[in-house]
Image (cartoon, rainbow, N blue to C red; front, side, top):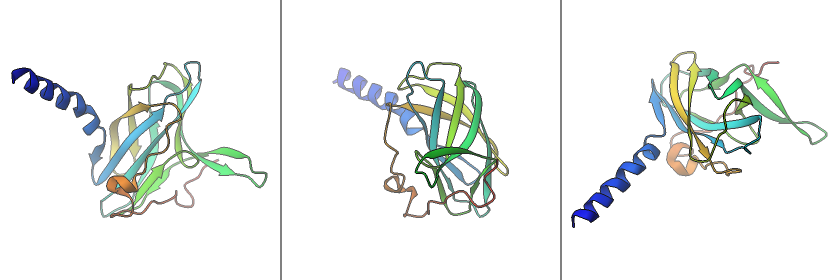
Length: 175
């Protein structure tokens, strides 16, 4: 019986980092910050997450800091009339009160340029999200399998059940 209990305890403890992957601060909930594993020789990567604002006031994501890249920026993907997708720098991302904003493939995302470390599936990469109101929020980006599909945040209870996915507000885009 004791080996079974030891095994069960080990399984629970090993799952704890997965359960603690999201972060909450001042009405904001950062949901599954992640980076699909890039090729070992890649010079850039993209980061994704959902940010739920259960607070009464809006906030704005103004920066992302990570030591694994020479430069980290907020971007969005725009599709031109020619059908070609292009990335555009965003100065900030508005997080309206009572809504969830999703940074996902094909839309808004975090762009890591000039990678200084190899990112391997299963790694937890520290970073800091900087908000106008909530300030600095430490997070860990989970390195997911390469080419991992976007997570269904609505199915995780962060979409239609209490939050609406919101695009970046007009005026948030820079350059």
